[in-house]
Structure formats: structure tokens, C-alpha cells
Image 1 (cartoon, rainbow, N blue to C red):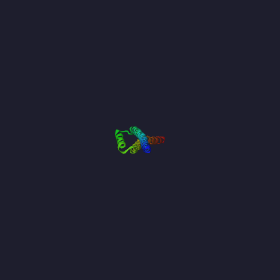
Image 2 (cartoon, helix red, strand yellow; image 1 turned 90 degrees about the vertical axis):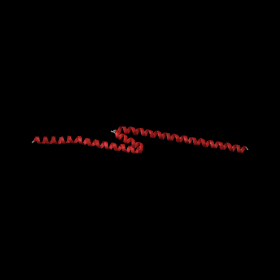
Image 3 (tube, helix red, strand yellow; image 1 turned 180 degrees about the vertical axis):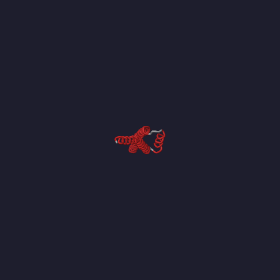
Image 4 (tube, rainbow, N blue to C red; image 1 turned 30 degrees about the vertical axis):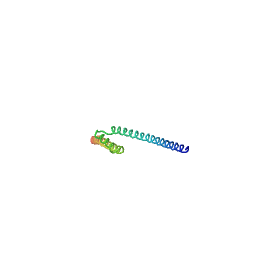
Length: 118
């Protein structure tokens, strides 16, 4: 009789110990998921800030946000890179167009100076 009571109490204790271990494992997993969620939210906030800085037009901003929502962070970063490349190319073109007239003027001035020396 004593043996069966001891056996029952050991079974109850071991099942309580198992339950406690499972609760601890679940709490650990919850903490890990909460940290991952916080990291995700932080990345999204950083990306939204980048969208605001990089995009020139509201249409670009809306497009970037749509990509972020529907296709994810990686696709949004790729879109923002393409926007930056286009802006860089446009900037080089306008800079090249601005420099061309001055170089043409220099050539004309040099030609004028050479003609005037004769």
C-alpha cells in the first residue's frame, strides 16, 4: 500500500515537473518570438524612414510602401536601390548638360582668342 502511494506521488511529481519544464520552454519561445517581432518592427520603421528620404515623389513612396507590404523587405530595398540609381543617373545627365554649354563656350572663346591674335 505504501509502495502504491509513493508510486502515485512520484507520478504526480514527475508530471508536474514535466508540465513546469514545458511552461518554461514555452516562456522561452515566447520571449524569442517577441524579440524577433521587435527586430522586425524596428527594421520596418527604419525602412519607412529610408523610403521617406529616398523617394522624391509621393508616387514613388506609395509604390515603395506597396512593395514593402505585399512583397517584403528585400523587394522594397531593391526598389529603393533602383530609385537611387535612377536619381544618380539623372543627376549625372543634368550635370553633364550643365557642363556642356560651358565647355562649348570655352571652345568658342578659345577660337575667338586664337582668331583675334592673328
